[in-house]
Image 1 (cartoon, rainbow, N blue to C red):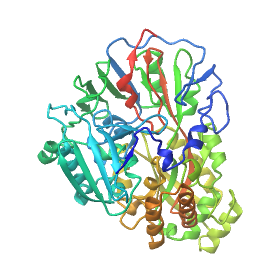
Image 2 (image 1 turned 180 degrees about the vertical axis):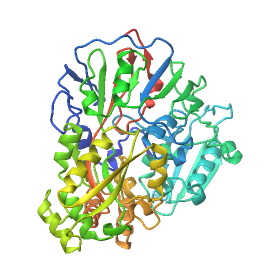
Image 3 (image 1 turned 60 degrees about the vertical axis):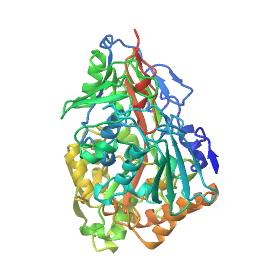
Length: 541
């Protein structure tokens, strides 16, 4: 057996140095830096996050033992295996634990599994579980809970969004209460990083059996679910019997405020401690003693095109839309420069050339018009674009910018802004012509598209593209362990995706939170994770 040290970097599977290296003090306006600000000095922490302060005053943060987090969007469900919205994931990961975790450097760390080992041929993965863990209802955590959780994810009837990540698991056995053995159909070095995701959270086998997962959250995480006031707040209390260092605060309140300006006003009034602010115009107004913390995002922002509808069925039309969009102009206008152009893959050595595979090597509206004419749409056409609200205020800015750019080639975008739950339902059903929202990526490039562009992908209907060639390449990427060979495989996948243009890949951005100075110990994370709240204290400011 080969023991894998839990401190090894995910970069063994996907080199991420460029991702983290792109982070720079947000006082600059370089698009590889964090959110731009003209406000005061910036410092870079050891974890790679940046902090910024600027010279105006705000009142002291609200006193008390609860950390109050404000954001513009509400959660949409209570089941981590079904969670797709970022705000839902951010909340549920405080309640549920995963077998492993990612730190701020994207290194795998122990979670509910203390360590793991592969068989020599890589087709058997043994998980050694942590002792002394209890669920919020008092039941002890054992291997039976891991077996039940993984089987629930693999059960197609569950509709688990992480199912495709773990399809290499053929057999799950539990030799004893603290050991789980996964028998694999193929060698799969991606599993440890997969098992860090909220969508692979471990839940009580009793809760699964009782069918209460989506109504009565019962995890092993640092915070215990109290209540969800839809459209208003999620209330979590500190779990005193947490297996790690118990949080020093009494709990977390996640409050929903209508817009980023409201969040900033609430921070300045001392009504909230942390604001998830995405609008760069509002971020520029965050002044001292408020602190801006940022980390380069692991996710990316695509323009989803539904290739089963109308003119979008034609590849030339989809390519025309992609070639017409000036990504940098969009980043500058809608994001104040706070983004980086990207292709399908955003991670380090795997990062894609945004244009390699398209018939253009940069924005070219003349070629876009010709492609439309060749496809029989010289006079253009109109399509609906659904936009998620609540996740980020910049979404509508991006939609309006795309609307203006595409109007120049005769494509009329009819923008429709939807609440999170409505957008998610329509997106999952592929009930749209086109759609705008941020999309998550994994620390390993395999995880980014296995759910989409494979014939068995759980979101294949949203992607609208699969082929035997893509199936084979994605499987090769999963089972190949040589880093250089993997880079070549993902370059091939990227070129196919850009050629077919089922989506338009626009940019990747940054994760940003604004804090009152009383908050100590918060760490900005590339995934946007709020897990560092378990180590936060509320000082005197």
